[in-house]
Image 1 (cartoon, rainbow, N blue to C red):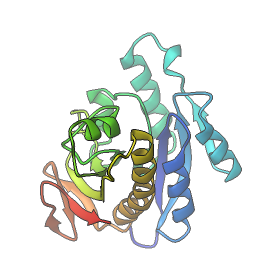
Image 2: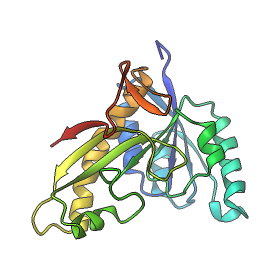
Image 3: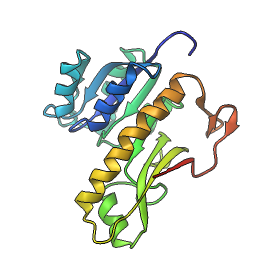
Length: 215
């Protein structure tokens, strides 16, 4: 993006841990968090934005008659900020095809599993129940398929013996907080982009599983 800061709108639904990680890294990563939108009026992430003097707004999905009505209102709210990038950070709403298409190539999500394994919810317990030896988080471009867009990067961690889902979740969250700001900085610098439905980094197509970061 040259000398111009990449303007990012972040969508949240809850605590805002990944929002905080994005905020903390923004001063040295070539992007600015310009606005935060939550579908949950009690989301603690809104307080995080307030403490950092970042503007925010609430679009409670319960106030809309249909998913389409909510999506259209959300798209207007995002468009009002004219962002370069929309970052989903624990946003617990499935977006419809129209809004996803509108922000194609400009919308990222972080998911707490090694996609394509375990799209959706309860990912940590599902990894444990399957007897997996490793787990982690994935950043991907958002498409119409739930958690199915082109993968950009995965942070992997080993699963410890007798680990609970809560313990595993806490360790994966640390990886998420490292991974997401890094990927957003790649986008902000122009190194990362979507081309022909494929993630491209430094002019080269990324492998199907994305870049692998193991710890």
